[in-house]
Length: 334
Image (cartoon, rainbow, N blue to C red; front, side):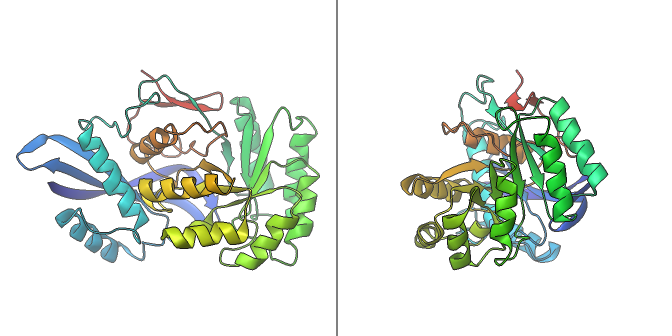
């Protein structure tokens, strides 16, 4: 087996606000694998990182040094390198299935299965966030996820209330993502204010690593809590079990590039189901290569919840793809 990698930089259509600052560009590395003597069939996988969030990315030089090692030995243990693990796993599956971008030969690949997704509203000032909300509603999304923490909490409540004044919870599902922005002391009061607006769930209300405080919050919360950043860096099966058993969240959110690739995410799903915890899948700003792989992986499960897979339209220079989003669903157009 032979392998190589190359880097590509994608550019956002408009600056996107996250808990890690304003993003204008996104770097990704692509691993290509092929059988020795058969270079006509190539499997491709994407290694996607978010600086400041990805546990396996410190700087370009060390990351590419590790990529060089991986290409020389694809069998090495990558449990502490989730973005690389995802890239290698999907490249090998793509190669196995003929190098045509098929990671899992399922209904999604055949264009027979549509996956419900949420419309994402990025952080920004009130005017910008309101514009995005109206755009997502006009595009037919019935689930909207709003990142909060960029502006005053009261202003964010006002934005959410403006949606509820027009659309009931039966018409529009609202999710919020706090990215760990609340303190343990004020989190419960804020959750009560959000619950009054019939919010479906909140992602990571307090910062990761405070297991006991998060347990107490999940036990007392008036609305469902989903863990996201909390799962990063928890790589062994025993540690995953310990986290879920300790915190007992209502949901977990899985990003294969952050949470152990395909195999690591599958472990999280198996444990979540064991503890009666629901889950949904989210992309981590991958290009269409990685997003396509995550969609196919998601389609392996019978999960009716709207997924966080609507990031394919972020870039001016994304890789061409048949991935299509219409009326709150993503599918492969044949």
